[in-house]
Length: 400
Image 1 (tube, rainbow, N blue to C red):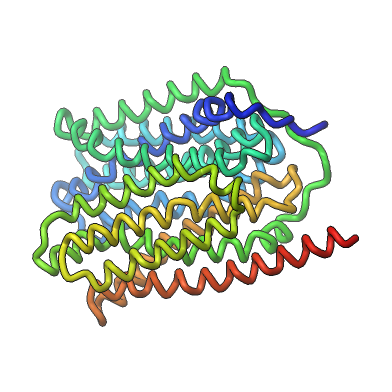
Image 2: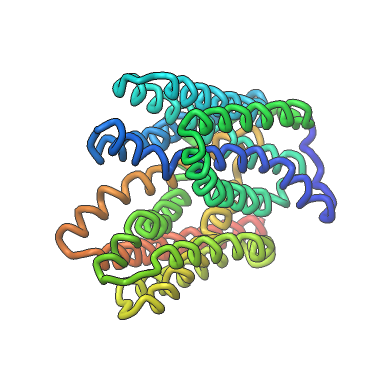
């Protein structure tokens, strides 16, 4: 079966947005309980803060475990299949929350909330990987960077909107309203996705998963190293501000998020114009400067500037390196490659919290930003080597 021809530019954005909206729904549902569950588990159910943190982390564990499986299913049965499955898992997650609202036994409530997090992690895998592959399948490989960029906007936009909405729902009626909203939104997305045109499953002999992983590995390492700054920003900037007796940590997080989304929207075409490697190198440089400013910040204003630069630098790293990682991957392995590549982001965010916590215990909060800057420097070295290797390969092919 011949690959889907590229869509003409004027219709590309609309097609991609109409696809990544399903990922937006799932990330909106991810955001709903983020500011609700920890307080519920710790203060109302009486469990420790560690248990509350573990409950939130269960989602990321489920996502990590299911990424590669979802990618393989996307290749074999089409990305629409895994998006539908993801939305179905999100609906089950809402059902678990709803069931917990009818219980009065703390252990049963905790167990049902844990199940909801696991199902939501599987949902994230389905829509996170499937929407990218689905968008590329509809518009053509030439628009890979746009599909990945808009999917990222949908992800972070969904979480940003979901968190305050979740708090409002919980204040209005507790977790029952949270469960109802989760299930209804997921089912509405499932119904809409069912009627959206899928893309054909392309023929060809797929590569072994181990070979796909070997190809993606160096690109994933740069993503993981570059994402250390994201993990430290989200997890520790509020505590860092408090340690300095500063106010305005919320403004720093908002500046970080706005810069991230703005660069994703406005700079997506830069990857197609200048190439993934060059965009990634510029992004690493901007992120590195931002992290150093956060480390050395003498005032909240400088810290705010550092947060904005960190967000701006982080924004294009994922799509820029993904575009380069997908070069040379057969179309029949596209979903698997995206899934495996994204695993490195999951691992980075999961490991940054405890790792940075150890650094803070010995060197203070500012040291985690310096750790992030060092990780960025290592990512630059790997990216330069990948770019050099790519240039030599291209030169050899042209000579032949």
